[in-house]
Image (cartoon, rainbow, N blue to C red; front, side):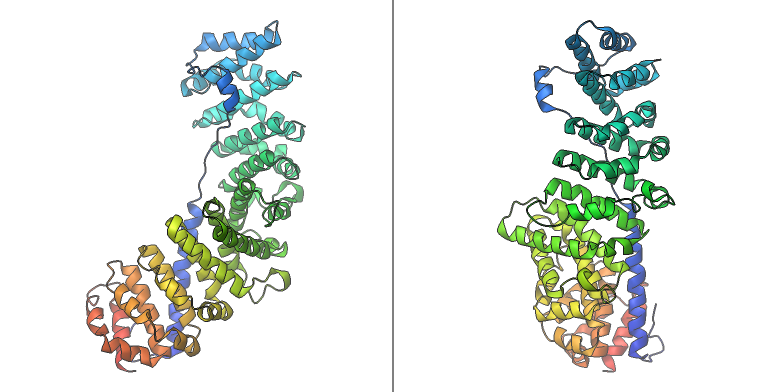
Length: 499
């Protein structure tokens, strides 16, 4: 915290450096919070057509006797259709948590189901896999751990020929991965990473989407940064496999880009980047340029049509770009990895306007990227000014406190680049907007406004005079008694009066 208590003005460099340090600390805390808020979920894959064919009957809770009966029929029935119907009935019963609990504690039940999974009869095998899938969707870790005897077979079947069966196995594995550490301890030495890497070249979009889901589940677990993303044995780690380059390939814009697949793998890339294991590897594979081109493509798509569904892709793509930029200063990243300044800024503002109208919750994601673009790059700040984007940025201030803080932070990034940048920020609508934000009840918004005004006063003395003429000191007096703001208010008052 810098202070102006003694009534002395400190050198501009000292004040600017303290403002930068405070902002870096706040942004580091925000990044940590974002990493800790990753969502782990489960998915249930059910065949609507088969559900209709089964007559839409209400699934019944099964007791031990019914479970044993259906397993015996599935194992020993004289006709294949009879055996298949028995597994269908069992699967429907397993949709109930009560049946799942009964099933896993019934001696020999899982052994019998795994035996049917390894059957040489395709329909029985498929129904057995569907039963396992129902079990994998349970919220009880004991149910997931009961499925351990099946995991090696599920992995083996990923190299099969039936895309439907592979898809089912992938979703089942994805569900099991997040539920139990015991499951993961078994899957890793069984070779889940190489098995997933082998699937990524599948020509089937349903398989790729399921693969993205399973991989994202694996990348989110707590031990991923230490045990799954890196590894001494290259072929058993994510970064040591071909997965990163293929993920980036699937995110390349063009006619082959599939939205569902891209969404899944964009989240995978986000979790890899958040692990902070080796983001330079992703940059060397063209991560920044691929994501930058995808951003341009998304902006073009929302201009062409309102109903694109791209807001689902926008969130992970914006986060990936934001977090990669915190690792690599743009000046250091050469050649094909550099982002085109004006094109990226223009595309980002197109998306911000789209979010404002359709998905306001995504505005912070876009502004976070703009913050990271402008933090260490005078060229991006120049683009912001030369394209007259300050006023559209100010129009976002009323949306929310979070949005206000990010808008003000971006403006601080521009102002701290020096007098030439502050001259282009002032005059204009900025002063009236800042006097307005000083009246906000949120202390962080007010604090960020004070930081921006301090920079403007230091580099553009006319700003301080205008502030005084518009009764700025009276606005500041409201915050003199607030402990978190006292020092900054006093320092700003001193700066304004000595210009």
